[in-house]
Image (tube, rainbow, N blue to C red; front, top):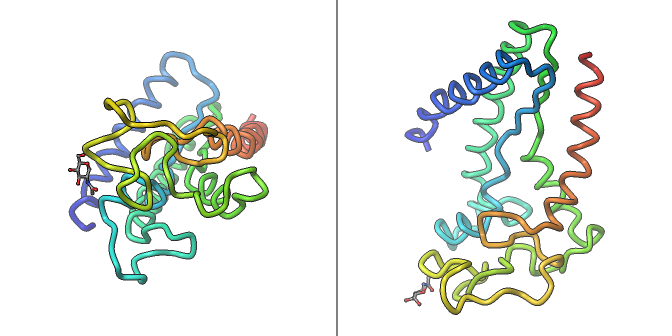
Length: 184
Ligand SMILES: *[C@@H]1O[C@H](CO)[C@@H](O)[C@H](O)[C@H]1NC(C)=O
């Protein structure tokens, strides 16, 4: 974890330099998304699966990876604050993808997802409880697709289903519009 944390500065710098480029091209409203709660994604849940219950949080996500995503998101938000002071007439808004995914996972039933299947991929092959196999991912020959993708959160272990993105977008859109209107 310490090793990957050292890479975060470089990642944040790349994001900020990309945003500056957009602003220099004339952008006046910029949305910068943070990272998802990656400890909840089947690809990482499979890669780092462990019998130690202390490694999982209340949503059965990997604490270490969610902690890492949070670490990067906090650094990103600090960098956005700095950037905002450098460009006071540009509206720069952080989009909280991390909590969008966590919020969705906390309310799976009310969002129409199948309970108990939350961490399974729709497109994948069922060697483990996440329906994910790194060497036989979605798109490989013979890898099946579930009957109803809208009941599941994860499409292929890395990307979410359209339904999951729709649920998250609803909340994020409100947040983004609110954030921009507070700044213009
Ligand atoms: C993934 O699929 C390969 C190829 O079918 C198989 O050999 C391997 O055992 C599977 N891995 C897991 C973790 O089940």
